[in-house]
Amino acid sequence: MASDKIQIFTDGNFDQTVVKSDKPVLVDFWAEWCGPCRRLAPTVDALATDYDGKVTVGKLNVDENPGTAGRFSIRGIPTILIFKAGEIVESVVGLADKDQLKLLIDKHV
Amino acid sequence: MSPHRNVTIIGSGPAGLTAALYAARANLKPLLIEGIEAGGQLMLTTMVENFPGFRDGIMGPELMADMRAQAERFGTEIIQGNVAKADLSRRPFRLDMGDSATYTETLIIATGASARLLGLPSERALLGHGVSTCATCDGFFFKGKPIAVVGGGDSALEEAIFLTKFASKVTLVHRRDTLRASKIMQDKAFANPKIEFAWNSEVEDVRDISKGVVTAIVLRDARDGTITEVPVEGVFVAIGHTPNTSLFAHQLEMDVNGYLVTAQGTKTNIPGVFACGDVQDHVYRQAITAAGSGCMAAIDAERFLEHVPTDLESTVVN
Image (cartoon, rainbow over all chains, first blue to last red):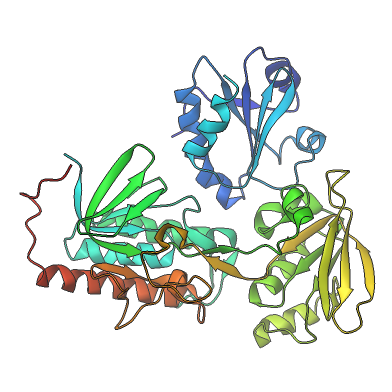
């Protein structure tokens, strides 16, 4: 069950919702056919609830949004990027657990 | 009062889920802690054609979802999470996960093995930027592009064949002049016009860290040291696995490669701790053998509990 706090990022809204955001933003690059991405999804959902109001947490489907995936040279998923003031401040490739991700987020809030 | 369990299983591949199924059906109310790579290695595969009972094959992730549902149906409690610390010095054993601890009378270790990397600094730096250990996850990013697969076993060939669906050309890099993969996989690979072989080749380097993406793989001929550079945009590493046993260092007996040593079925050197699946098997490493040993571990744990007087209700745990 996806959290209702989680944002859906697209090629169309990425600049407005991520790059120009005044809060830190966590972006989960994923696709339907990626097994590990599906396993990471509940963790990202939980983070969206935990950091509600402090950090924007959302997902970007690389299948449907190849422009953004290409722009950040995403060549493997799942990849998590954390943006602050439009810059990438953290990048995690592959699976990670909630505690690891929280440590990274907490450096920027 | 912390929860106190009869049986706790760490790992959620075929070994862990089969152990959970048998322990649940023995009314032991097992707890299964999934781990980060939930579902195990089969989550990274496509069609599994050698699991008996599925005559037309089954997708790896689908098989794992079914095994999980079957274990849950009989009362396994499955939690997402990762054990950070295990204290096996006395029973009940203590498992720490983030901010909670679990105590358990018996422990079944099914933590499996994870993909091994070559160990080059450039490989680690470019992981996710052209270097990958998961063809099914990342093949999509290499449509119409040349790539390399490193390795000579069944997994390497399966990845190479799968990747020909996307890539313009797949160079299979192997350090010997023969493959150790099964005959059926070799036949498929040799028949595939998109796969080329770089025999007797060791990976010297992956370029190009300064650009932040893979542009080429540098190979060294194992016989005469000749260096060649093959332009590729992706490098898929499939050179085997490392057992996930660091949690149990200095507590459980391991062989020189870190695999848990088991005897008389699935017993480790600590009574009440059992191991099954790839974490204790570097020989067979199949879904079906992992499942079989998971069944054995659950039966071993059940027999252990029958012969050790425990009163779970009245045990006081801090």
